[in-house]
Length: 199
Image (tube, rainbow, N blue to C red; front, side, top):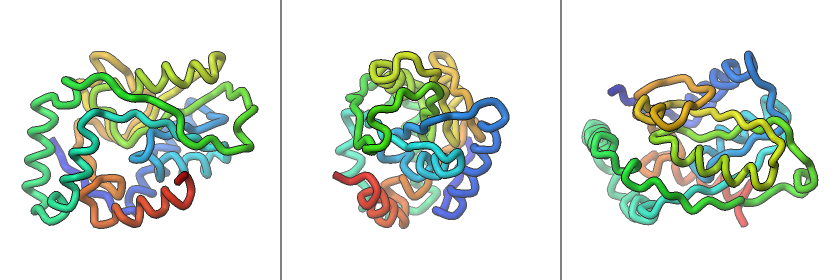
């Protein structure tokens, strides 16, 4: 399994690549990103397609533990972080916790009364497919007539047993970016998120 560590600049380039793949088959009229991790990806795709950007949360039970461990992860060597992440994937931690607490985040005032028809749901990576499946259920409650397509920078092949992501760049890559708790750019990433979507 390959490991890719993206800076904010490189993540932006990858997002543009993803947009190029998407526009060949689909034109969204709204982008919904899985908060907070896919915030920059969703925001940039919204800018590229010139459409509103909405946020949806899909929280796992162990999310708080990962936040607690973030300072330690930042000082670990890259190779050790890769080994730990690889073990997490092989152990099936995410698969063993399929349920998510899914809820809408901040909806821009200008988007509240629009009935979107083509929604692009975005995450940084599709690990098991559970996040996408459960977010789609919530999106359909709000926009029952919408066609929903999904996009991610990376897709793990094990997820395709239960869910097919429509658009992606990489398969079976461990991607670390500014959205990762152990990234040196994570603090700036969160500050940017709070400025745009913070309560």
